[in-house]
Image (cartoon, rainbow, N blue to C red; front, side, top):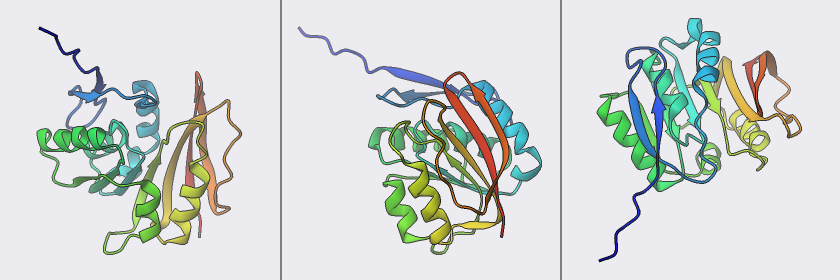
Length: 194
């Protein structure tokens, strides 16, 4: 009798807020690298005074680490966007387990969603952009966020990239507010100016 190899699982820990310390399993996949705990801790310290009541958008969600952390720490809503079916299933299960009615995960390509525009959704106060490294996704995503009217005035935009890659060219009205590196990861916070 043949035995099935068990599917590899990753573990995500919520580092702060109402679900602090909760551990959530997600299906491991090539290129899926949740934002490290210490980077998330730094990021959410940066966002501490702006997060409560904010409407958030987590593009390229992967494990959902950033969007779930935002909801745990008091965001009014978070739309998580992930095109991989299993990742979307995992994130949706986590939202249900955590009883997070203000979180929603869509299984859609981020660019397809951005191209549509926000529709009836509230303007986004905080965006998390942590796409797979090496695919040149940050520049076109930033352009669409601006062109299609997704962002509130003064919106905060978090960008995570490999520091081995050239810095992406982002919209001119995004002013760099914070900039750090940890290992191969460069992480930055921008403020959208009028």
